[in-house]
Image (cartoon, rainbow, N blue to C red; front, side, top):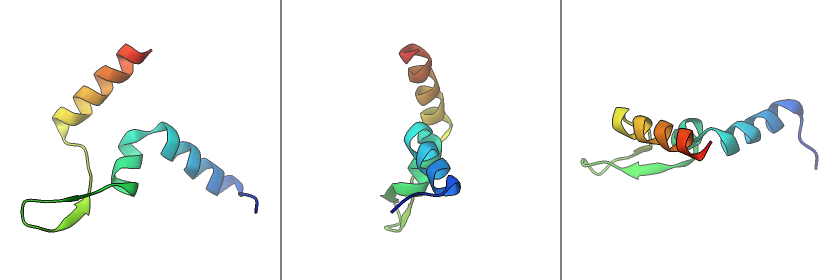
Length: 56
């Protein structure tokens, strides 16, 4: 089975963009007991950005 350009692009984005990967693939149980996509909040985005800068 081969991937078309769209599928390959999506896989690349999933592998390289955590802010895209998290809500697409990860789910959390919220405080109301509902399962929701894991969307980074402002503080989490800040920490993720700083860690990325340090990794460079």
